[in-house]
Structures are given as structure tokens and as C-alpha cells.
Picture 1 (cartoon, rainbow, N blue to C red):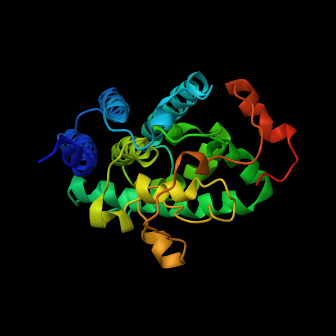
Picture 2: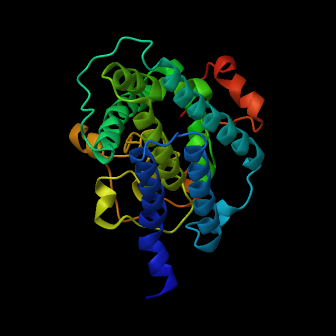
Picture 3: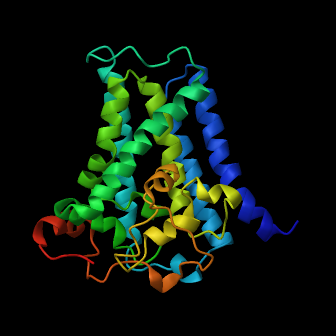
Length: 284
């Protein structure tokens, strides 16, 4: 089997699957999520970054677009936000009233996807709102302003936008009684998945591309044309897109000049944080 084919169809299941297997095993053993989950997430993202150099989807996307340093800060800030959220959830255990409906007796391997489904529904709903509510779009537009797609785009988000996207699903999961360790486990595997979702790797999920939000379909969501980008909102599963009629697939791939926004965005991190509050223009 050629190396290209091996990487094309094996990259996601091996790396993402390896991270998921570690997280589920670690959680089943009852070990502390910190710092193991952070370290395994970083290892997964590092592997994605290496594969971009080995088998890129677009050679141009491997070159700096005056964005690498800023995107690195986005990754650092949002990974700290994720870790802080997980830590806060652990502190809240036993301190806030929750329901007793969570299936605590289920195996961890079933509880984690259940928590993931709850969070993913919330992410889908808030993601769609972020494209149609003016002030939410200004926060979310930072994510779409990238002129290339690569592993760090998954965390190229205004912190307020990240909180708005994840907040409702997290609140519901916590109120239903989902254990903090279960939620932390899902957030860890989601971090690596988002790296793949935006990765500049020539890879494929095969028939699963219709159901899992990999790069093949997500690139259509990053299209420069605002109207074209109202598809494939799912962060992990595309089931919600299928149900709501927003899933889109096409044999012609999105190419290098097709992503970004027709708007001049600042390139520094601090300027991007302030941009949504300074601009009153309709981004399109």
C-alpha cells in the first residue's frame, strides 16, 4: 500500500482513535484528568501538525500568512480556557444541585459519547445562531477570517465566542449530572478532532465523511462566500446538519483561494480581540 493512501485513510483513525482510546482507558481506571488529558491533546495536535508537512492538502496553506504567531496565542488561550472549564467543573461537583438522571452505571465508553452528543447539539445550535445574530457573528467572524486552513484554525476563536458556543451544552450536561471527568474526556478528544477538522492534510474519512465533521466537508463551511458557508455547522457529528438540512457535500474540493472573508482583519491577537467591538459593518 502506498504511503499516500495509508496516510489518507489511516491518519484520522490512528491519531484520533489513539487519543480517544487513551482518554477512555484513563477515565475507566479512575485516574485524574490533569495533566494527562492536556498532554495527550497536545500530542495529538502535534501529530496533526507534522502530517501537514508530510502530506498537505494545499501547499500554500503550509506557509505563514502573517497569522502563525497570532493563531498560536489563540490555541494557548483557548486550551487554557478548556482546561479552566474542566477544572471548574471538578470544583462544582457536589456544590451545585444537579439531576439524578445521568446513567452513572454505564461504562465510561458510553458515558463520554453521550456527554459529547449533548455538547454537540448545543454547539450546532449556537454555531448556527452565530451566523445569523449580528453581534454573535462579529465575535465568530474572527474564526472565519483565516486565509488558510491548518491545524491551529480549530482554536482561532474569540474567547467570548468560544464560551457562547460551548456554554449551553456544558450547562445542560452538568445539570443532567454528567461527571466532570466525563465532560473533560470529551473536551479532550474534541480538541484533537477540531485540529483534524481544519487540518491542511490530504486525508479522508471515507464513508464516515457524511456523519463526522472532518476537513473534507468542513472546508465548505469556511468558504469565502457567506451564502455558501451556511452549511456543515457540526463540530463533531454532522447528524444535526443532516436532520436540519444544512449538510452539504460536493466532489469538487475547496481550494486555497476559496476560504476567508471579504473583509480586512487585524493580524495581531489583541487587535482581533477588540475588532468585534469596534466594527459595525456587515461582514460578508
